[in-house]
Image (cartoon, rainbow, N blue to C red):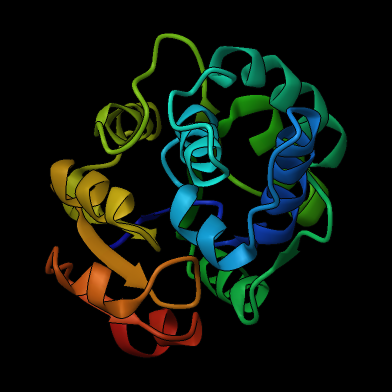
Length: 217
């Protein structure tokens, strides 16, 4: 019986592509580079902002990553201002979360977005206290796909792996959920395509949040 659902944030719960693209392009502009289009940004995000910047800089011509270290504080400063830029939940997500709560299934977020920005996104869109657990990238905790973040959530909420579903939209998420021994669900409405998800053979691949309540639970 499922008692907990853990969700990725970017590309799973919230459409944050415009915020990520806008902030990254401000960083590129700072160094006289860019811009990066949204379709390429879909491929650059998901593994933390440092990898995101590394990919963006190379795409924009900084092959030797001469600006990489300097780009980190520039990005974090700008992202603190623009992390909510045109951010919105995906169609069907509010209804899914309501349905899970009605079934007494707890909900959690695990993201590679910096922790403070993760909190800001989730609490601004859904309200404080709406989720049972929220975790972003923070010192002392390995980023996804390392399963450590998932295992900490399970331990904190006293939930067995067999009682948990993990949702995400990228290969990083598929490796995270499967690596933690969870029933893993790939979602196609986010930043990557079905083919990327299928390569990891998750238990389910869904095209709309309604399918969780109608077909999985």
